[in-house]
Length: 66
Image (spheres, rainbow, N blue to C red):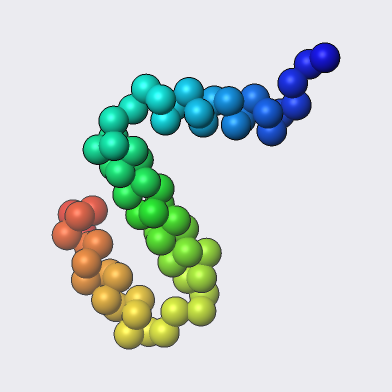
């Protein structure tokens, strides 16, 4: 009987945990958390106040060379 998508995912996760160090797992989790935070801001961009948008522009303008 073939494995379900969920079963393959679970086994892949177990294999990944087995071959990574605790430091690597922390770094993966840190990057995932940061990506989630960025997505939350981007998805809610229309709801941001003018002050919030100004803060984001001040932070990111030097990064893009504007």
